[in-house]
Length: 313
Image (cartoon, rainbow, N blue to C red):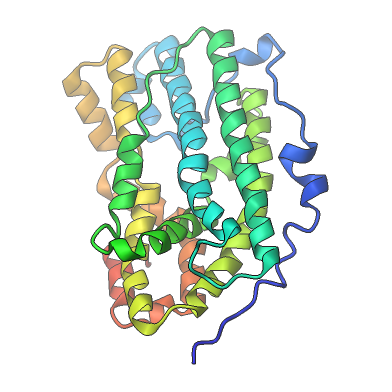
């Protein structure tokens, strides 16, 4: 008999009505004219901004590329939160996840849906504000490429589509990215960006606790064959979730004046396989540790699949 853990001990949302950003936080508005001259995004978090060909350009070009990276991240966040996170979390909340869940877990699921809609709203809000204040228009953004790749994991088992969507959210909500950790304390970055990322990080701390516990609950309700399937999918979901978005970088480099050849060189050298693998391994370390603690890596063949994707030391 499979042991089914409870989520009754998860207290992350006990004070949600008082502390959630959507309930208690102010709208973040850019008001300081001098502040707009700060950085849009830390260069150290954007690999192609440190490439010698980019560093050899004039400051306005580098600033434009920095702004476009921020706009891409805000656009991604605005799409991802509702298209991926809320898609699965709504199933938890409305009882269509296929799992046996206590009412408290479902109620907290609705709270996460509210959080994520608010994250999407203020991501687009800040993007529009900064476009107007800085006089830099965001390039067109295509979220379809990302979600198509993400949804391709598990597309051969359509009967488990909902389960795979739940796994997508478990993976993404338990990752630790440098953006949420570093930007709030970086005084070289535009204040409204720092404040927005800080607000987001506080909410995501609650989501991380929720989905870490949720995965244990989910795992406890799977039979042996399904656990084996899940162990196969998880490494691929981590990779797809953290793979760098080189298409927006390519578009920004070309728009800023680089030739197609130079752009190809910058992207290839900035996002080489070794650097990308190390970055993904770092960001996914806590997620992989969660899976190991729950027993995913005890499944025959699972350690080899995680290692093949570069997720294990």
